Amino acid sequence: MAKTYINTVKYMIKMKFEIDGIVDKPDIIGAIFGQSEGLLGDEMDLKELQKNGKIGRIEINHTTAMGRTKGEVLVPSSMDMAETSLLAASIESVDKVGPCQAKFEIDDIDDTRTSKRQEIKDRAKELLKKMMDKSSPETQTLRDEIRENVRAAEITEYGPDKLPAGPDIEISEEIIVVEGRADVLNMLRNQIKNVIGMNGSNISSTISELGKKKSITAFVDGDRGGILNARKLAQLARIAYIAKAPDGKEVEELTRKEILQSLKKRVPAEEELSERKFPGGGEFRERAFQERPFRERGFRERSFGQRSFGGGMRDHGDRGSRPTSRWGNRDDGMRPDRRERREFVPRETIAPREPIQEFPARPTLSQNEESVYRPILDELKGTMKARILDDKNKQVKEVEVKNLVEEMAKIKNAHSIVFDGVITKRLFDAAEKAGAKYVVGVRKGKIEENGKVKAVTL
Image (cartoon, rainbow, N blue to C red; front, top):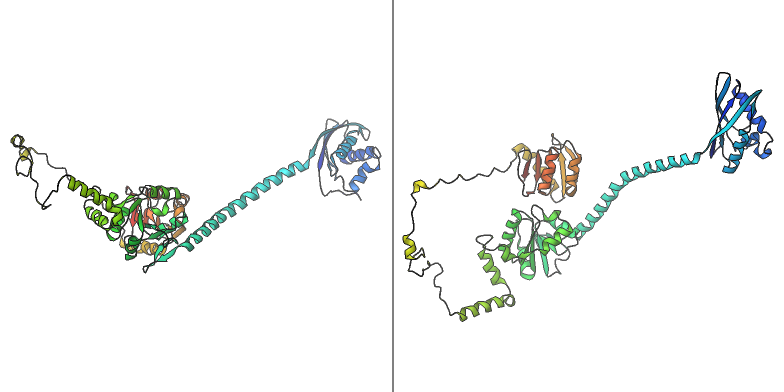
């Protein structure tokens, strides 16, 4: 019994035929086998080819109309290209089916492997896409986790207060003082290891002791709170320079390029906290000058002495006495002829002052709201993570703070965001777009409240 199937179909012979008469499918098959028998030798005989599995079952599709029969023949072949072409030509030579004249004509010989290759390629693309979608985020997360673990392993505790610090804090002559642990981690992540945190505004005596032995650069956030921390640090320790993050940004969220640029733009502490910028800063300048080593301030002392001796010693007397003018011992210091020209304006003609503009009160939380958000913020402290809650205060997702803006764009039911970090303008705008009502963080940058979102610090 001849085989009716083959394991591998390489080519498909497609042939059209037209017969001048009405015949059935067995008639057509019989004509094909009969007229090709012995035509090309025993090796190319159709029965032998089917028996050996080199061709498959021959399919006939035909229709009859107006006394004529038309249709197509499909012959699957596993032979090579030359043998398949030879077989097709032998079938095409059939000119009679039964008593009727017939005409067979090759329509096409398809390479079935081409379509199979396309299917394989499409399937491979689909499988690759699934693998990338599944494995890429895990690879990225794993890489970030390894990097964070390495940086966390480098962080040390310094002094009796166990302040977070980098491994080079002992050996470096110049050190950088930042505000908190998250800032220290970000500095270590960017290969800066001579850094120590001062725990925000709770400045310990450990920093003061370091200031006696090392040159300190205070690196603070780019907001009002950062400058206030720098002023307090300057009163408790001797600092040489002050560096600030860009406006509205925190040290913990800066890139390496931003960190290096900020440190490059550092200014002497006495200049940054001068009387011109902050009234009352003269005390800091005087103390900083007295504590400066003699070899550093010798030039200034010599220059003061030369100026005094060169111009004659002046006794200013009591610095609190009132000055005397050239035209007499009067307080106004004006020439007499000009004092007589002074005109007085009746009080009734002076326009009343404009009322002082009152700033809106800072957003606050109710007692119930604070009882919900404060425990969550306490849990997140020091983790650099954020939690997104729905309107029932149930957790929707927990993400890294650095990915918070991107994740909020993907979540539609965000109602509250509680995170261990600073509420920046970029984060505030992202929360508003996401439809959130509350943003709760540790500190807040320069934000214009609009009444749609409450930005609250606990």
